[in-house]
Image 1: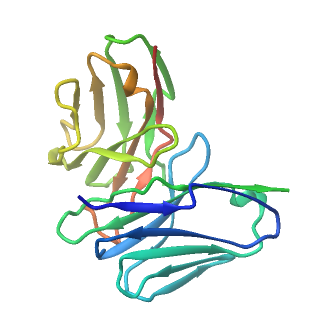
Image 2: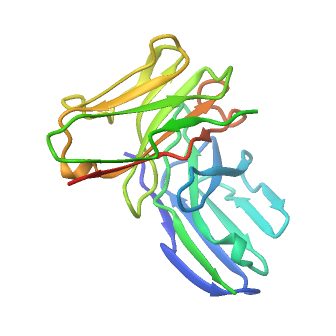
Length: 111
Length: 116
């Protein structure tokens, strides 16, 4: 059984601060997606990373896929209240063809 | 494009009652998923359809949960009889084709079920 861990579980920071959240596993992934979920809504795709060591930027968000494709991180620069939400990683494992979601990191950015 | 539609948004039932949820995916999306999201957790896949066939239902509690996608378009998920631990948000998602990194999931806003 694939173990998928996201950390931290909860994070409360002030507007303007930087933060990093992590997604770790003992399994190798063929690709990994990050989603953000706001209260009362479904998750929305932020990015897909495919290649080991890949770095993708989405405005103030920087996503990195580990060299061994077992882990990923999301760094937010100068967080804003609009970044508040549940951040979920969803790796895709070769051969299973299904997305398994982590437990998520719940982020709250205070104005 | 219109998003994934789900109804109802909220449902409160007593344990041992039955309930059904409905999902209409994005037009043209061949793959449809039902996820269960318990408070404080990430979504857990219950069942995955490719057109009107089941691809994966390994985590569906088949003694009480059933799902169908008869014409390969919309889908219903039923719980009968409900238990207290079924209280959760039930999310429907669709993708253009089967799980692939270049075919991401599009989620509806979910149905929040409370079992009392």
